[in-house]
Length: 175
Image (cartoon, rainbow, N blue to C red; front, side, top):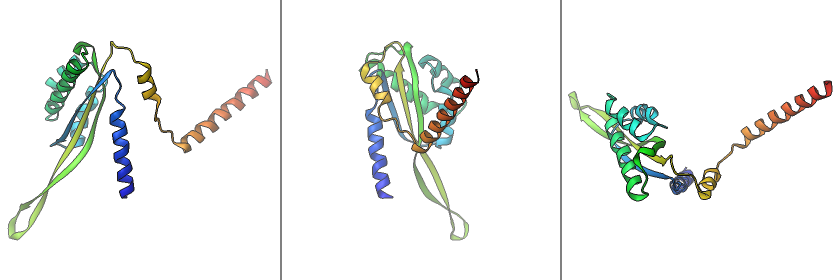
């Protein structure tokens, strides 16, 4: 189990290094809300433009929209300051919510008993991409590098390709 955790940390570090030159990342850790409730808002903004995202988040009635609004605003500020992107051309290319630690407390109850109180936290990551800038060769390499392919699925897909090829040959033979 410990070995898996170690590999997981290594993979997370590799993932953080693979940010493209046309992208900027903002991360909020230990936000005190359920990841499920934050995902409900994140799913609405993924792939939208920066200005449209801000309008949506201002009008959403959910509690999760305010921390996400602040994070999107921070990501755009990072993009304009660090890489001199234009905020009007920014697009939310990647938005994800991961579960954080669960803060556990005990609430005293009647007759000397106690009930557990669990306060879930989450980590929110938002990556902003500048749609006006073109990708460099390094960006294209980083996108294709490290794409893991499942060998079982690959074998199945190869069988399907061979089956289709045989059917195509039979059709040609009939003509």
